[in-house]
Length: 354
Image 1 (tube, rainbow, N blue to C red):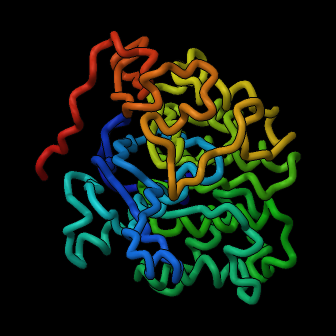
Image 2: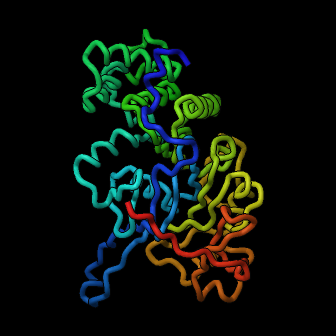
């Protein structure tokens, strides 16, 4: 990496694999508006559990891939990690600090440490601002450098993501989809983050561009030591980038572990169904799983295991009891499925005190 770009790396001293951010039994519930009829009948207010008791960890220099169908809760989890929403219950811990009770100073540090790359580069950039102004604004908001230093940093950022520096005065409408997404990535890098949350960052791009952007993510991680929370419904994307995988269904993590184990030897029937329906990178973008029917209403999920109405391996107990999370194949590979009822149950996650 050129010496001029070395200053873009995170200054924090961490070892690869150290936990930077973790969620502990995080739940996000949204109240459902009641109809006039339900009010007259005095029916109890219902809730939509978008994220339900989720434990995940994002580690330095590694990629946690979160996968699931539309409505599984993966984007809501991303917003909770970003601090854009507060959990209904549970904790989000960053470097030992509980963000749900942190003050303004802790929040300011967190805002620069965790950045986002959104799905659609066509709407995430202001169409009236040039590339230089978009990147410069991020530096100004976080009070990074003098005007001359910010001007130099803009060139560094553009070079880092593969954009010619003579495109400084171009606006988003003058760039391709891949070019716009590179600007979005450069904007996220401007404040020297330690974690990038990437929410479906290649799904809106042409097939020919997707591999280039994924390669850019991999290069940035290798050179800058970034950690990623990579949200997608495309398992082929995770096969390229993820070190660890969490599979979500109706707000819950149903399987989690090292990517080679989850993708190579899946334990949960839902993960197997996702893999069976997985397209080649970019060839198909359906978000339903073929052969197992439609996802239930998240406002009124099934009793017991929420997947039992679609599961090809359903047992009588599945409609009666929630499955417990158990280790399968290795201590790091876990699943919530009654098929593994004879394996040891994992203890509930207990967050370390900060």
